[in-house]
Image (cartoon, rainbow, N blue to C red; front, side):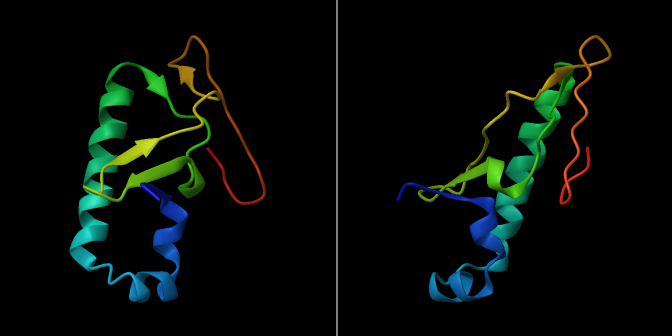
Length: 88
């Protein structure tokens, strides 16, 4: 298992079992923030951003956005998505 979804990091039992520290969570979210900022700086809007669409590499806790087919390009190709659990 080289990667886990970000959703896994919301499971308190798994975090305790794997000895996940608060500093690890902060590192993951800072990396995710940097990645999102770079994507947005290119004019891309992530249409389906949710914890299941983020993979965290276990070796260095780098975060990767996956399942991005619903991304849009700024005002030219807006992609709004809605589900019961997520609103963009």
